[in-house]
Length: 160
Image (tube, rainbow, N blue to C red; front, side, top):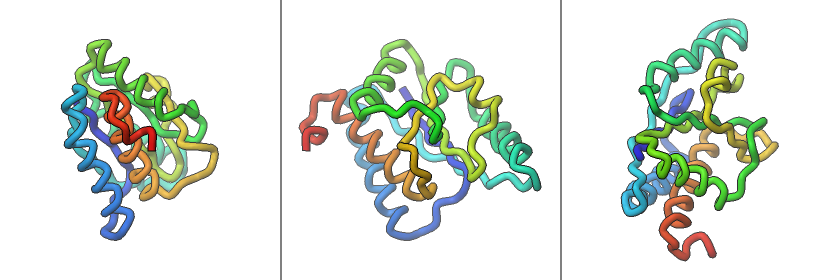
């Protein structure tokens, strides 16, 4: 299953980008052994509308253009389900085992995700009740994808 990260906003050079790249590279190397292929990160510019609901709608429409039929959609959102790493890995494994060919994991803009995306999402996941800068969300997502691959393969990384 191909996994793409869709992110509103650009990641600037710096230590956060280096760390995120490190985890996404680890996932790129470890994922294929368990049927997961990292297809990269798609970055879009933040919406330019004055109102938050219009910015969400604009950003949501851009994401929807990247969704092919049959692609699973996971939204990262503070109001989503708070999963353990094992549950996160299990959900990804279930999508893969259920025949999904692709998964898009979406990091929303500063205003969150549009309702149209919520209606399409297969799963909405929280990285905790705290609000995180988007740069750190990418680091945490990259690490969790790598961890998911190690959990699915039985690698000891997860036990550390």
